[in-house]
Length: 153
Image (cartoon, rainbow, N blue to C red; front, top):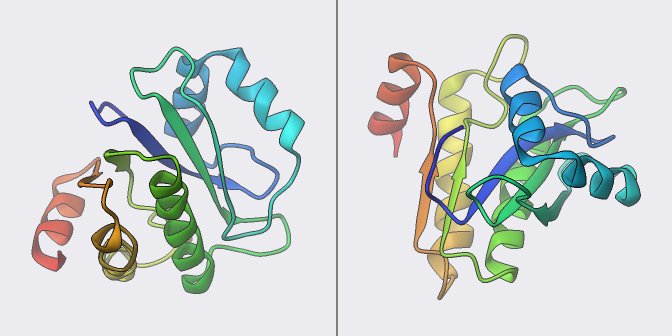
């Protein structure tokens, strides 16, 4: 995920492991210190979010938001909590800009339209009330995703 934002919000499992190949690539690019920090933190509940330094990434911070666990699949409620808590962490840390992929969209997960709705609501509810968070950039992988976000936001 390439972005010039101060923070990157990424979906993870509750055991803090990456969900996707791009998530693994992002973590690898950040460097081993990020994985070591996550291992120190331990598990978090679905919907929870934790912050680590960005490591070797251009982003200052990584915000890791749990959208599933081994026992709990991706659900609307879990993604909604993860988005809200992830954006709240950004606000708490005084972040001005955050990038995120479509959290919860993917094979066997939520419909893209639901993810667009949840993302827009979280941004309205959290970022709109913040004096610092001025930009939320959704980084998409396909033209279909881009069209859905442009139409729905």
